[in-house]
Length: 265
Length: 320
Image 1 (tube, rainbow over the protein chains, first blue to last red):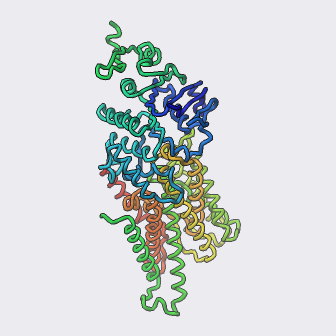
Image 2: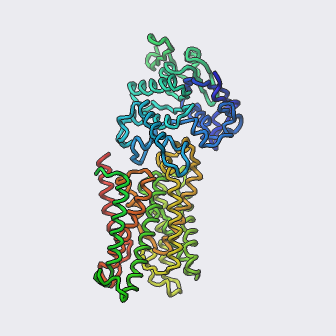
Image 3: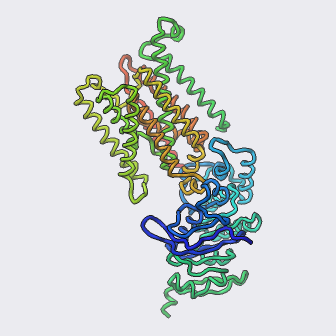
C-alpha cells in the first residue's frame, strides 16, 4: 500500500495563533483514518490543512507524493472531497441539484452537466441510500438525511480521498451508526480513503483502522485503536477519569466514563 | 404547478412581452392602438419604446444585482437598495452632475460611489474578519440614510438649475431620454448579466456555503470580489439614469426562487425577464395613472413590493 497523504513538521493555524505544532503523519491508501482529541486540540484545523483550505506556516503536506500547494484548486477537488461540519443551508436547492454540484470541479465554466454527470450523481444517491429523496428540497430533510445527501455530493466528485469533519455530531446513535456503516462500506467497496474527525471515542475505536490523538496541537499518540485508546492516554489528554474495556462483540477498546459521584468514593 | 423549467422561462418571456405591449400602448396621452403606428404619433411611439427599454434594462440589472448580493451574503434579504449601494451610486451621480461632467461619464462616477459605499458598509459591519449578516444589513441601512441625506442637502443648495427639483434621485424615475446614455447603460448591464451568468456554478456553490464552494475547487474570495464589482458597476450605471428604485432587487429574485428554484442557471434568466417585466408594468402605471402628473416609480415599486414581501415572509415562516 502506498502513502496517499503525508504531513511533515506541519505547523500553522490562523492569523493570531498557531494551532498545530510540528505534526508528522502518514495516511495510507484505503485506510479509514480517525482524528480524535479534546475541543480546541486542532482536529478541524488539521483537516483544513490537509484539504488546502489553510496554508502551513512551516512544514509541508504531500498528496500522492507531491506538495499539495503544487496542485490547482480544481485539480485537487477532483481527487479530494470534504464534508464540512453541519451548517445551515439558506436556499432550498433540491437534493439532486446539490449532489450534482459535486460535478462542478469536473465541468468547464459554461459547460452544462452531461449524461455521464447525471449518472454519476444518480449513483452517488444510490450509494448513500438517498435516491428516494432526489426531488425533495434540502430544507425539508432530517439531519441524518441531510448528512447523507452531503456525503453523496462529495461522492459525486469521485474522490480518492474523503475528509469528514464530525459528520455525526448532531445525530442520534441510530443515525450515527448508519452514517459510519455507509462510510465503512464506501471505504471497503469503492476503495476511498476516509479521514474523519470524530468526537465520540467509541465510534472512532469501532470504525477506524488507524487514528491519531491530538493534544494542544501536537500528536499525542498514533496507531491502531488498541494502542491508542488506553486509559493512560485518555486521562492525560482529556483530564478526566475513564475506564477502558473491550467491546464484547468487536473486541475493540470501549471507553466508559466515571461520573463525579463515584469519583469521590 | 408542474411546469417544466424551460416552459417556465417561456411563460416569463410571454409575460415580459405582454408588459412591453402594455408599456407601449399606455401613457399620459390616450392613443388607440390602431393609430399608434401612424406617422403623426411617431414621436410618441419612439419615446414610449425608449422608456420601455430603459425600464426593462433597469429592472433586469437591479434584479440580477439582487441575486448576486443574496447569494454571496447567503441572505435572501439583501439588495443594492437596502445595502446602501444605490445611495452610494446616487451620491456619485449627483456629485458628477454638480461638477458639470459630461452625461456619458456620470455612470462611471456613480460606479465609484457604489463601490465606495460597498467598501464602507463592509468595513463598518466587519467584526474580526467576519461579516455578520445582521450588522451588514444594519450598516447598509445607516449608510443609505446618511448618503440620501447628503444627496438632499446637495440638491437643495446646488446653484445648478438642472438639479433643482431633482428629488427623483431618491424616489426613482425613468424620465431619461438621453439616447447616448441609454446605450452605455444597456451595454454595462448586458455585460454585467452575462458575466454573472458565466459564474452560475460558482454562485450555486457559494450560496450552499463558502466551505462547500472552496472544496468544489472555487476560489471563493476572488469570485466574491469579482461579482461585487459587477454589482457595483451595474448599480452605478442604473442609478445614474433612474435614481434609486427600491424593492426590485429584493422581491423579484425572491419570487423567482419560489418559481424556478435557487439554481442560478435558471434563476438568472428568470430574474432578468421577471424584473424587466415588473419594472415595465410599474413604470407604465407610474406615467398613466394620473396624467399628466407622473408618480415617481420608486413609490409604485414600494407600494407593490412591500405587501408582496410581507406575504412572502409570512408564508415562509409558516412552512418552517
